[in-house]
Image 1 (tube, rainbow, N blue to C red):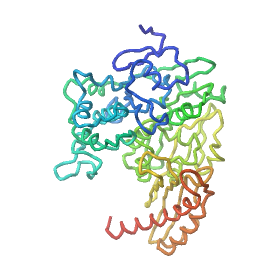
Image 2 (image 1 turned 120 degrees about the vertical axis):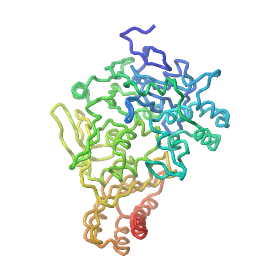
Image 3 (image 1 turned 135 degrees about the vertical axis):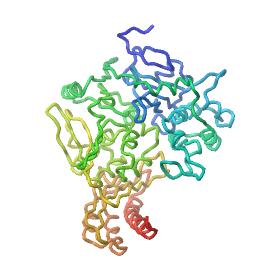
Image 4 (image 1 turned 180 degrees about the horizontal axis):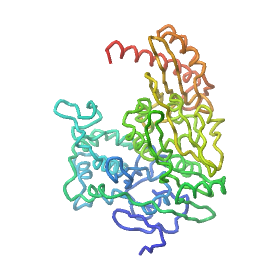
Amino acid sequence: MATPDIPTVTLNGRAVPLGDVAPHTTALDWLRGCGATGAKEGCAEGECGACSVMVARPGVDTPTEWTPLNACLMPAGSLAGQEVVTSEGLGSPERMHPVQQEMAVRGGSQCGYCTPGFVCSMAAEYYRPGRCAGAPGPDGASDEHEHRHEQGANGFDLHALSGNLCRCTGYRPIRDAAYALGEPEQGDTLAARLAAPPPEVTPLRLGRDGAEIVRPADLAQTLQLIAERPDAVLVAGSTDWGVEVNLRGSRPALTVAIDRLAELRGFSVTDEWVEIGAALSLTEVERRLDGQVPLLAEMFPQFASRLIRNGATIGGNLGTGSPIGDTPPALLALDAVVVLTSAAGDREVPLAEYFTGYRQSVRRPDELIRAVRVPRPLARLTAFHKIAKRRFDDISSVAVGFALDVEDGVVRRARIGLGGVAATPVRALATEEALVGQPWREDAVRRAAEVMAGEGTPLDDHRASAAYRSAMLGQALLKLYAHDTTLEEVGA
C-alpha cells in the first residue's frame, strides 16, 4: 500500500509505489518489473517503438492528452505522480480495446513482439482530439488541409506510427486496422480523462548508489542547484539521456528533470518575435505554431518520428550541441536567438555565435536554455532539406535550412544553416555572400552552388562520404531554385 511520502505512479488506473528505484533505471525497466511486460526493448535508443506507452500530458486542444512516448528513454523517476497506460491497461482478453480488436481481426499482429508498442501509439492517435473532425470529406479533402495518402477516411494520421517498426513487414494490415477505427464510445474512460486537468507535477528527489535524480519545484531552485553542481545533467525529453544510459553506460551523479518547469514552457507570438519555450516538446511546438513558421513546419515531419517528437525539445537539441541535430540548421537560417538564464538573469546569444566546438557552446554550467526566439518578419523563400538513408525516423547525413528574401528578381538577403558537414552546425557564410545582390537566376544560382559545395569540413563516416556530403550541399541549392521557379510557373 502506497503511503503519502512515497512517490507513486498511476499505472493502468492503479497507484503503484515507485519504490527504491535507481536514478538510472529507465521507465521501461521499471514497468516490466511491475509486470507490464507488453512493452519490449527492441533497440534501446528510440528507433523501433516496441517500448511505447501512453502518458497523460498537458494538451493543446484539451486539458489532457494521451501522449505516446518511448519508455526505454525516460528515467523511471520522471513518472512520479504521473499517469501511464500500457497495452495491458487498454483492454482484456474478454473485452478488447477497439485498437486491439482491429489489430487482431485484420492480421496486424504477426510475431507479436512490436504489437503492444503499435497498439499504444495507435490508441493515442485514436484518442487524439479532433481526429474525426479533421477526416477527409467525400471529395477526399478535409476541412483543414488537403487529403494525403497517409491519412485515412477516419482522420487517422499514419505518421502517428512512424516511430514503430514491424520486423515482420506487416505494415498493410496494421494500416488497415488504423483506418478501420471509429470514434471512442460513450463511457470510454480514457476518452473521458481528456476533459480533466493533467496530473500535477510534484518535486522529486530519489537517490541510490551515489547517484540522484531530482525534479526541482521551480526555475529558481533549478538554477541554484546547477550553480552548486556543475556536473548536473539536465534532461527534458530524455531522448539523448536514454541513449547515453542504455548504449554507452553513462551514469551521471546528478540528473535534473526540467521538462515540466512552467518557466521553460512558454510560447508567444508578437510582431517582433516568435518565442518558443525550451522545454516544449517538438509536437507541442508544431501544433502551437500551426504553420506560422513555414521553415519549421517543413522540418518537423522530418525530425526522427512522432514518438521522438513527443518528447524531444528544441532546448535539448541545442543543449546537446550535436552537429547532426535537425533544429539547428533551420534555426540558423531563421536568425534565431538563444535565451540563456542563470541566477543572475537572462542573456541573449545569436544562435550563429552559440556553438564553439564539437558538442560545446557558450552556455555556462550555471545556465540553461530558457527559450529560443525567431525574429519576424520571416523570409519569403524558405525550405528544409534533409538527406538521410530513410525518409523518416533517421539521422541526417546532411541537413540544410534556407531563408532567402528575393525582391524584383534579386536576392536581397540570404541565411543558410548547415548540419552534418562540420564539428558544429554552421552558417554557409560564403554561399550567402555569393547570393546576396545577385539575380535569382539559374546561372547565378549554379555559381553559388559551386561555392556551397565547398562549405564546411565534411568527413567520411558510416552515414555518408565527405564527397557525397559536399555534392549534396550544392544540389540542395539547385533544388531550392528549381522548386521555387516551378511554383512561380504554376502560379502557386
